Length: 189
Image 1 (cartoon, rainbow, N blue to C red):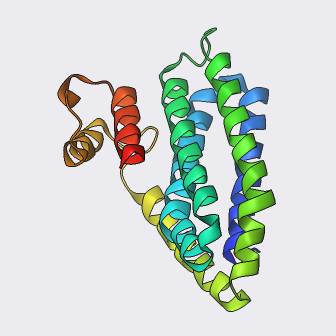
Image 2 (cartoon, rainbow, N blue to C red):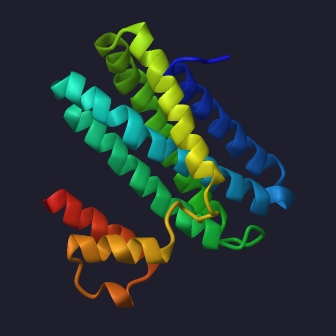
C-alpha cells in the first residue's frame, strides 16, 4: 500500500489508466465509468493543486513554472471531461472527446512522473512526503464525499468564481465558457 504522496499520486495515475481501458472494453458501462472517471480525476486534481503543488513551488521555486503548467493541464482535461460527460456514450460524438481526454491525461501523467514527482522526492524528506500523503488522501476524500459535480464544479460555483475574478458577461456563458474565461483572467493576473 502506497503511504507517501508520490506513491498515492502514482497509484491514482494507474487507476485512471485502468478506467480508460474499462471504458474502451465495456461500452455498455460507459455512463457509470465516465462518472467514476470524472469524480476520481477531479478529486485527484484538487488534492494535487491544494496539497502538493504549493508545497513543491515553495520548497523549490525553480519548479513554479512546472507546477503552474500541471494545474493548467488539469483544467484543460476538465474542460474535455465536460464535453465527454455531455456526449452520448453510444453515439459517434463520444470517441473524439474520449481520445482527446486520454491523450491529455496521458501527456500530463508522463510529465508529472518524469519531472514533478522526482523534484518532489528530491525537495522533501520521506517523513514530509508521508505527511503529505495523508493530507492528499484526506483532501481527495473530502472531494469524493461531496456532492456529485460533473467535471468538478457546478455552474453556480463557476459563476461565483467568475464574479470574484471580474469576468464580464458571465451570466450568459456556458459552463465551458466560464471555465475558459476564469482561466484567462487568472493567467492574465
